[in-house]
Figure 1 (cartoon, rainbow, N blue to C red):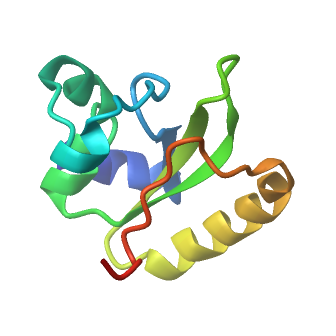
Figure 2: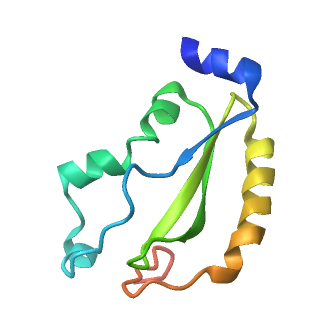
Length: 114
């Protein structure tokens, strides 16, 4: 936590990629059985771990797509109790980037009733 406290003396937020790699295609059976891939999983959460372990608030926004059409996100990590700042940043960035949003080929709606 020491290094994060030092960073927050000079900056309001830490900005990182959401993941350490661009998204990879979901296997056909993953929607039914789930996704378990330790190698890709570790790379995916690389930039999320510190904030989660330290209890720092964070938010991520989709900002575009790679050459294969997979989504790319940007993460804002804030100092403790800075949720309002993060929401304002995410809202502003989403407004700039949302014109290019598209629904993925494989889409799993978590809120849909079974």
